[in-house]
Image (cartoon, rainbow, N blue to C red; front, side, top):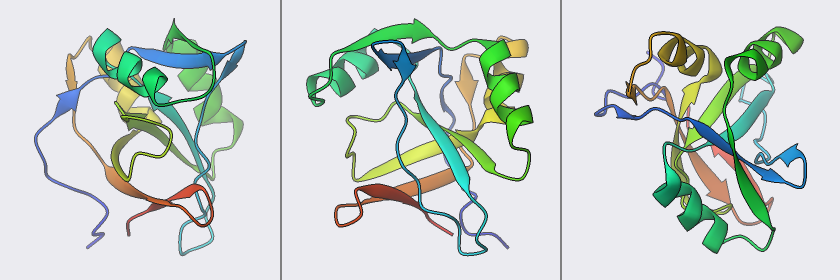
Length: 135
């Protein structure tokens, strides 16, 4: 059994990403123990969570809708990577965050679901300034 998959209460589905100038901000995530790489982005359900994140960041950040086409492109671009959306992080160095796969987020958007099940938890590592998927 994969211990990184959790059965916690669903969280609000993400609708926004944050941009620094014209670039979507995303955390660095260490490869999985198997060596599989992980591509992640921060996703936010509403104004309160992204404002909290923005307040703890030194970057000038603006919200932008998380669109289906962008998710689909990321999923298809590198099919052998794990694609995650970190859900409502409180800041760029939030000690522990929950994430859903981009596929699950895309499906939630297509079905207009307001909540989403989480697939993974990640911990922030100060030394490497990156996240580690808990496996």
